[in-house]
Length: 100
Image (cartoon, rainbow, N blue to C red; front, side):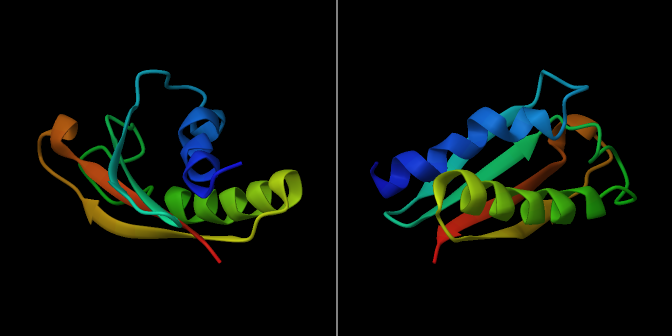
């Protein structure tokens, strides 16, 4: 499987972390051979405060383990950028996945 294809799988299983909300907006904002950056918007965990930001750090750790156990692929998953806005629809978080 091509490295980019492996990294794109994240978009398909991310909703299992945030399963109460099926209207998330998950966009690829950067794509390289071994690295991808997603922007997640419209998440109730972002809202208008940063109280639940820890959720994304936990999700990154779980994502690393999912890739390692299910695809035998070591990746590094990081929170890259957090944007909290008074307008909930404008809040977003960027998460990167990079093959190690």
